[in-house]
Length: 301
Image (cartoon, rainbow, N blue to C red; front, top):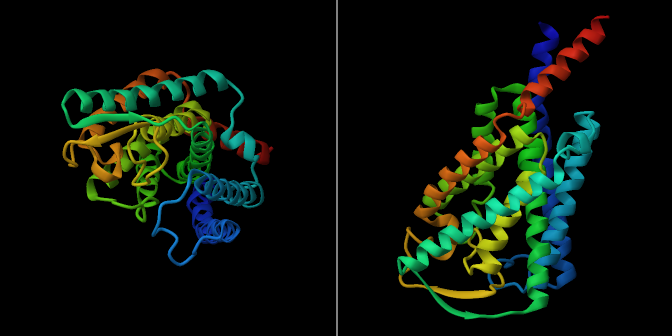
């Protein structure tokens, strides 16, 4: 019993250990990025950044995040970074599903808002360089946030708590990670919490972060650069230029589709779809318990 209790406490203890190093590391990489780009560190958010600047800043953010999570996974958790996050089975299937579901979510929201006259088409602005920068930007965002929020935070929570409690806590963290975003509101925080449930549930059942990364990328990329919404309050390059008839809680306003009440309905549908798609896969937490039990039996022998 003592071995089991010690094992369960390791999860939340590891999370407490990484929080400050994570904040300091990511902040340091972002400061370096700002200095490289010649940005004003103090008034960093006061002006619109270019696609290239976004690209560089989030590349460095990803490097800092992956670096600190790799360090803690291998040195503190004493586990393989790759095996904890990048299961080799069903990689292409999970990535394809994530990309398709993200597209369907955003296209559905875009179409409904157009048909209800909440959103109006204005023009198309094709800039290949900005489009390529945007692809890279949102790949970096997806990798950084999924490696930390799901790959480290949720995985360790499941060591200490019931998987559903762990899922709710990790989704709350994911929502709070966006507190500093422009135009944040109670509704958008709640929708980000629901998004955290979607991404976390998929991680539990796929045993890796390929699906969450693909879904996260697809959600952001089609939301902003393709269908013309802001992404979590950020105004990035937009292939399709649109305008709101009136910015409100139904269409999301300046925060983007993630601030839309309509998004709540779409996310609930996504949760249902993900559950139906992955319910037959053994949840990650069950596999972790089996591994721990085998380790305990080996130690006793």
